[in-house]
Length: 237
Image (cartoon, rainbow, N blue to C red):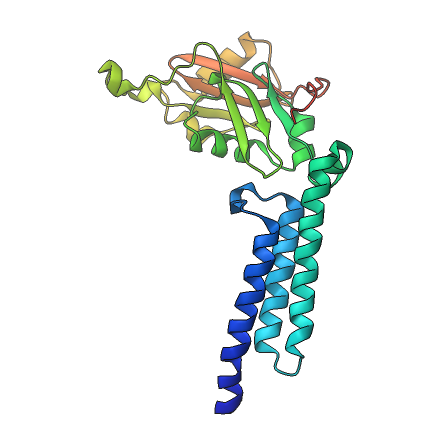
């Protein structure tokens, strides 16, 4: 590429920026975290067209502009139509999915939204729920974010508010994940591996195949079975 070709990218870039701005105005003011899967696909396509319009000098710049504006118009029309039609909104945008219901983790729902128990635990911790027993309901929104509803016993009061010292026993240890006992996590508790085996047998679990998750905190062992046959309530829209 010679200097003249390099300089020709400047006006192409400015033109591309103007076209992108127009297309973005069509799509509305949604934040990235609020984009649906369809919006995300539209955005990726527009970005690809923009890059080609700037860098592939053999292509006519007007072709890229037409492609960007076409996808922008499609995105606008889809947004308009989904506001008018619930059926179309469900098909193109999707609906929220309940993944925890009445404190029970729904395995079928986890598979439906394509996340595993570790993903769920991570998002719960990000929202401040280190003990999953504090969650009554969890709903996967259409943008991929999980909304959590705490149980009645769970309050936003912190250890600092109560002037209580945080102790090792207050931390949540995941003892079983996906039917596998986590020996390294047990080392972070005040009990031995043998103690947990005895406690699980006392609860009637000689095998861990039916256990999706088992946590231990505040001297309490909480067990969450796979709940394969539990159906979720109707989704919220």
